[in-house]
Length: 233
View 1 (spheres, rainbow, N blue to C red):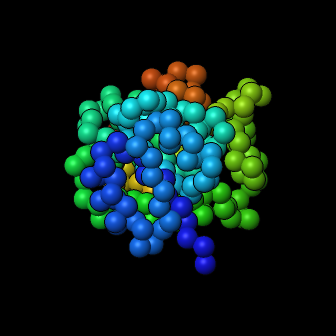
View 2: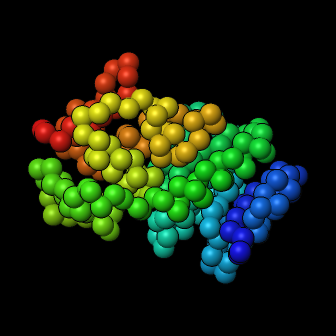
């Protein structure tokens, strides 16, 4: 059975090789030490997942992520960063990343996150035949077959994790899910999750779907509990 390929992009050689040691037992590992080489490796090797440092020589990790997202919206991209501020997390996830791992980290946690994202990648676009393939909510039209979203007839660009999160909530209308439950359902690791990731993705979805993101009609906050999708405006 062919091993899945992981691209590690990290300018610190010690960190790069430490992650390699943990991953190479189960995956084919390729590496790059700067943003330019990262794009070259991505284009030549077609990896299944990318671990991407934000602060890189040549081209920043944020710009590498944005460039990759112009040609591939589905590959899991996990940022590695020493920046733990909420604003930095928003900036990273806004560029198209699926997850954000803060340094210093336990290599075992990185391995667990990689496994979780690869599992989710396999099932991300499966859906039950019992669900309607096209769902309409006012100006929103969601196609469950090709995972597209239209708003007022125009295509809404959503990243993979945003689509997964939105469609999960849509398939459970008016059901309230905690941040922990959403992370477990979408990311697959309830013990290792950085739950701020959910808040950032919810905020991004609202900006793209809601007429007034500050007063959303569809994805509602239930204070003290979590979030729910409201099918009626």
